[in-house]
Amino acid sequence: MKKAIVTGISGQDGSYLSRLLIDKGYEVHGTIRRSSSINTSRIDDIIAEHESSGRLNLHYSDLLDSSSLSNLITNIQPDEIYNLAAQSHVAVSFKNPIFTTQTGTLGSITLLESVRYLDKEVKFYQASSSEMYGGDFIGSLNEESPFNPKSPYAASKVFAHNVTKLYRETYNLFAVNGILFNHESPLRGETFVTRKITKAVGRIAMGIQSKLTLGNLDASRDWGFAGDYVQAMYLMMQYKNPDDWVVATGETYTVKEFAEKAFSAVNLNWEDYVTTSEKYFRPNEVGYLLGDPSKARKNLKWKPEVSFDQLVQKMVEHDINQAKKEATLLKESLISPTWENPVVN
Image 1 (cartoon, rainbow, N blue to C red):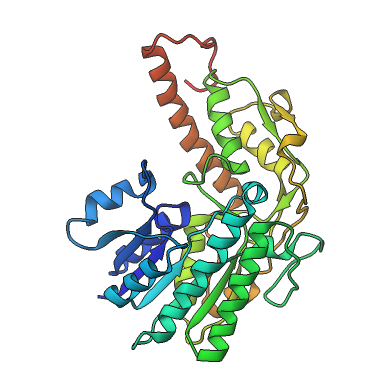
Image 2 (image 1 turned 120 degrees about the vertical axis):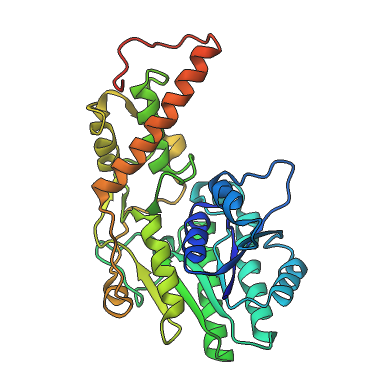
């Protein structure tokens, strides 16, 4: 049985990846940060099903605690390490640049150092990001396109990306970079714009919420489904040679188009509910991102299975169900928002 360590296992990507690896027969070890309130809601069903059998194992660790990471790797002796943990919200990275930079850089180099000295071959995956490109170029971006980071988050990702290449070339490690463009799902954090939109759609449809405030509606992104993208992560690690890979759909849509599609899923006109505020604009805006996944399609035989329309529909349906539960709780609590004529029955 292969063993894998997944940092950031309780996040969106970590939850989808851990399911995939367990289904493929792996023993999965995930890191979570010790805090007064630990949120494992995304993986609670996996914990319930697999923790008792040892197929899923959770460990307290932190990307800023090099000794805990090194001890974990030494004790587990993994076959693969997926470094997914990070402070991944771009807007927050401007407010917490030191923490964002530390987690984005120290974690990767600590893991690579530990792998370098381990007496066995360990495959290492680094979660790179399309934000590294900066969004100035209006065209498709591939593995050779130059980076121009526009946020502390993106800058930290460039460091981790480059140091992964450095260790691969210097120490002959099986170390890969997955340059993933935006990937979403019902498990996406509620502060990210896609989930913010679909959650608002559900609440507005149920009469709980009346308006949605967004930032730059013209920002354009290449959006895919997170479940598809972790498949690409796995395939990179099984490929014959370590390399860098762009994972994307090859299509780009604006925030406005995402909102329009989401509201139309419940027969609402987005313009009746969406307002904008400069508060939600980034200090250094990334305007346009479009990926070229040709290399992954050709060599990994990977392609996205979920279309943009299907992705939006999947997220809206989930958040409508969430809003229904919220509406029931509000009724039971005798709180009285406007219940007249909800769109969803």
